[in-house]
Length: 221
Image (cartoon, rainbow, N blue to C red; front, side, top):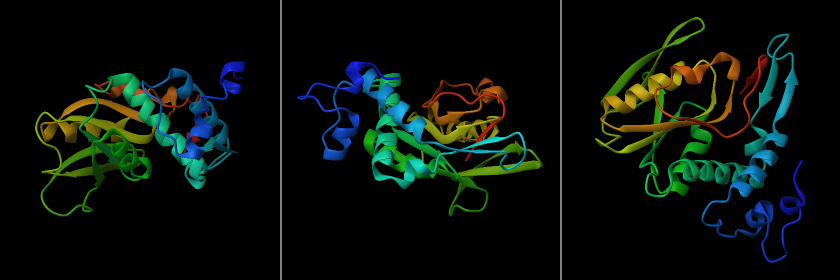
């Protein structure tokens, strides 16, 4: 529940929703109260489906965040605030790496906001030219991620993004690809997290989750 200040901002200072609707420039420095307001709105907009895809699973659908233009802007703004609050302007990433396929939904927009380049990590055989490859385990076997060999320059600061962290295997593979190219992996950023799978324990760089973690029985797409 929001307090009276965030629910009813002064008339001379619009709240996050009004600023987005009017196309106003974001406030600087980034406000923790603005981030809290945005994340609360985004979390309320997730759609839940009990017993999907199988009994006992509460499926959390993030697609409504992209179906509405204001929610989409709110998501990108919240992610931008999360990054700037975590790293500051001087330590911001040079490159945002997005994982196939949900990382492609917001990774390019976030990179543009941060003044960074965007680099996709794709399944094996989907990228042209010279590539580096990393394997990761899935429920029913092994899969492979690839990145173009010239996409990251040595010592560039790199942030890996995806929609959700579950077991962490795909994120580990993406991080290893960043290091193979000589990049400096500064962290991982996810919209949601399945806490009970403890995927963050496998990652060797700071992990940031935008929305509150999901408890056992949750699933997202």
